[in-house]
Image (tube, rainbow, N blue to C red; front, side, top):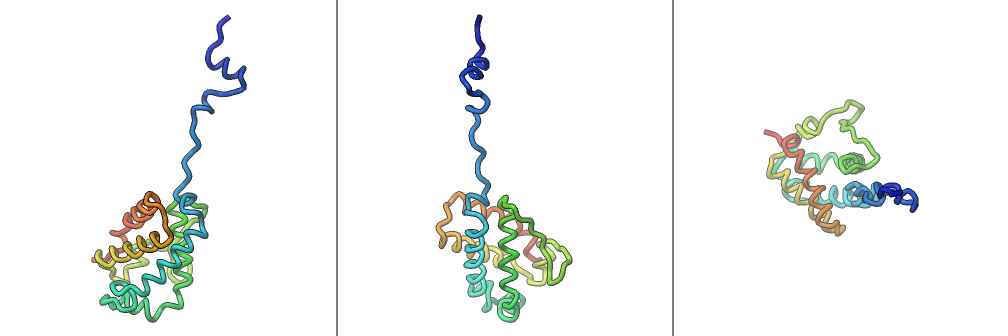
Length: 160
């Protein structure tokens, strides 16, 4: 009587299919450390954007300058929304739906349209995000993935 490899594995108490499988890779959300780590980066990033001379309260863009001087009462909510967005796009258990004050859902394009963000200004915000990720010593792989996810929305956010 001959035994196949599968039968031997069954008799030995193992399953070749299981032993040959590797554990699924953790999501970017998990690799970043979850909601608390993401919220810390978003908090740091959001405060840095307000202070940034290109896109913050001293920006040459009047819409950005006004937002960062007259609308800072909305910053805690914006930090919350940004945290939800990052958690969502990185595979976390939260779902982000953009809204202006109230409950009307809208896309990133509509949410940023009034700010008239130029491609150069978008790139400066991305650079600020990179500096915040560096501040928290986020590994290069995860940092690159976050920045790529952010950059994927450049055309939606920048105005003509």
